[in-house]
Image (tube, rainbow, N blue to C red; front, side, top):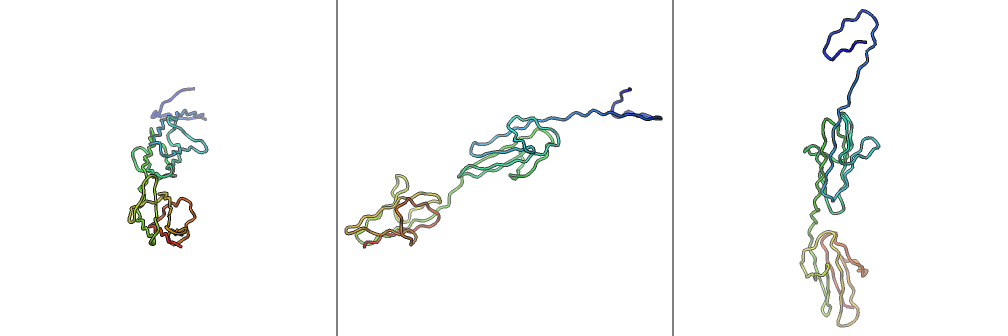
Length: 178
């Protein structure tokens, strides 16, 4: 058999077997993140890792899941990318996830104590006062003492159960003597 290269012209006057040779064009996948997320790059059912060899035309599904308390953005080859979408390989592929702490929502703490009652609200080692700024997810510890009897404590008008309270919005804590 004769060998011909691409672009040559061949005139055929009898049956001919044509055999072609193709070469996959391979590239490198790089995956980087800030460490506060999980990055997933899937080729079919196969999870790929940093440095994996990928081929032209491969379809990759690329996702990022931020750690709790973080938000993440994703780029592929420096272009913004939506987590969970597919990407078709056309060259070396750089997947970069950037995660930043979520900004908690600020709320106001209102403290009300009847006469003869001392109300103490702490966040960690800090004692909070009426009008303090508190944030979503803050954990508050609440206690009250009275000159006489055991005071009743209410958080947002619900009876307090003596468990740490997790802030979800503006919070009113009231302590009333019996």
